[in-house]
Amino acid sequence: MQNTDSNEIKYNPLINCNVTLENNNIISIPVSEIHIPVKTGITLAGKVFGNLPTTNPKNKIIALHGWLDNCELYSDIAPKIVANYFKKNETISLIAFDSAGHGLSDHRSEDYGEIYYLWDYIADFISALDLLEWKNCTLMGHSYGGILTYVIASSFSSKVNGLIVYENLGFMNFQTPEMHPMLLTEYIKLKTNDLKRKNKRTVKVFPTFDAACQNRAQGRYSTSLSVSKKLLKRGLKRIKPDPEHDVKGGYIYTYDTRIVYSNYMLPITWSLEQVKSFFEKIKCPTMVILASNGLYPDGDTEGRLKFLTNTKEFRYHVVNGNHHFLLEEESINELTQLTNSFLESLE
Image (cartoon, rainbow, N blue to C red; front, top):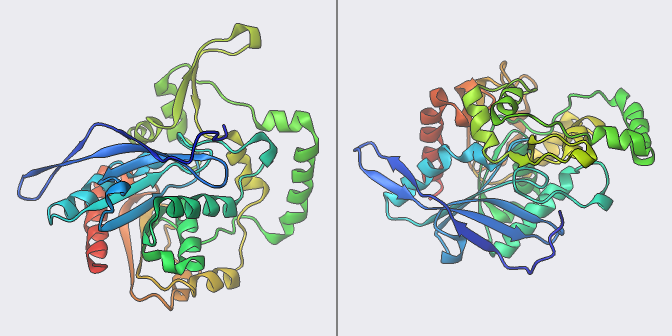
């Protein structure tokens, strides 16, 4: 759906989150829904934790999620980050966005094409920063969102004063260069064959919320059922039966089905030299945290992190957990401690 409204940023208050501190005091964290019509022609949705951006908070954080996820990924850690500032009487606005085609953000238009391109995600978020009138901020990114934050910190270094990346070591190369001619052929077929395009856009309907959560938990990046349910609070929508069009009632994912195919059709395949060129341009303090049982169980086997040679400070940690450890009980306390420690070093 394309944005046709005014350029006004809209906020809707949600239920506050309560965070219990070490001394057992409880801090109430305001949470609001945000809808921001960016210059790329869509409206981005997300959640604001803490102070609204309109209050000109001292501390500003943007958090980006990964492929097929949504901003609920940060629903556990974001209130704890904000609470750490509130207990020091500091203002903070942490915005966790839904990327285009994910969560409650708009899908790209029909005439956009069949592939969601990396660069257009970057354009979405740079436009959001401009509309928020944030000259700079700290970036947080998980998985695919980590790739986006690396690129922004590299290409728009003046806008980023700190970078935290969870479960990502830069541009992926899970396809070999030899496959590119075949992938290009498939892409052309997709662009020119209505039946193939329709098949790739088929939407699966689940009879119940739990059935959809079970399917998500068993996906490519498998999760526990509890993690799946957290993510799908924002990642599912209910549809009514439509016998005339042979549509059964139930639940469907909110993400654009074109995103699924994008990762395979035109993968983010970069050589180490290209990764090096981006990483060397990142100047801000940077922290990378991997999960022990995540995408990189053997760690940085390609030696990518050694390319972060120009950062003012660099931290690297491995935390017990799986790919979605930001929503796992066994990981969240350590992740919160490491994240808050890094953020405090930026002050």
